[in-house]
Length: 333
Image 1 (cartoon, rainbow, N blue to C red):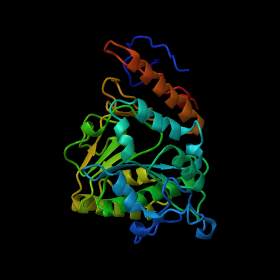
Image 2 (cartoon, helix red, strand yellow; image 1 turned 45 degrees about the horizontal axis):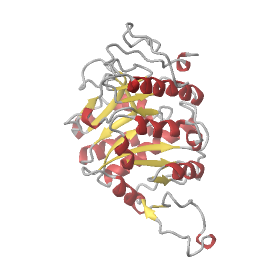
Image 3 (cartoon, rainbow, N blue to C red; image 1 turned 135 degrees about the vertical axis):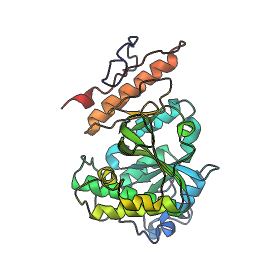
Image 4 (cartoon, one colour; image 1 turned 90 degrees about the vertical axis):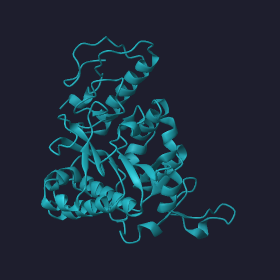
């Protein structure tokens, strides 16, 4: 693997062998979703009695996917990321070839932002849910920090607030994150709200770490629900900022202390990304295509991550020093 700025410079040379209709926040639990085997938005008159299947609510999907601790893994998906050979395929593949991750797929709920994404998800996965998005078309690639991108990010915060209100803990993961190992053992035993970082400076309690909302673990309780409501409301104070930047603006505000929410931040050794790649492939759990703008660049470099991972799995000896082939395209202007 080629070196990156945040990885060890001494390494064995590795050859690559593998070449939302707006949510009604008061009634989310009553919203109906089509089961993954049935296409959404089809009038009942168009479906025969033999083929019609009962509608199930989002809450039921969460209940079906949750583990014994009432925890679900949630990601969001639009058409651009759901196309064949796009990010969703890589996301699922990482679970299949990761260490201890195969059994986690049954706990993954994919929230689809358009019909095409739902159709594609339903071909590949069990727990797919479609949110209607009549106000905004979320199907295409949403360039970072554009108006539609911001709307999509705030839909996500709105949705996750409701998941907490329904009593579910969650790991939220962007679909451009590769799950290489089961991350649950690396979650902190305390902390209501735990977030990954673009850059981690050594202290999991330090909110000055450069955070990244693409991977969060949140426990459902009064503190986390109140925090997410305030986070979502704060978008009105910063209309041109996305959720991550708004978090950075509010994290030191007095009302955060008043809520009493306990925050922890993940070490990039375990939860790495292209901003700061994990320094040890023997420990890494997830790799995120952060610090990377553009779908094609993400696809190219995440394929390199999976290539590196497959090569690592094929080795019999312990790897002492690790650098990654990625980022490559993501470093280009």
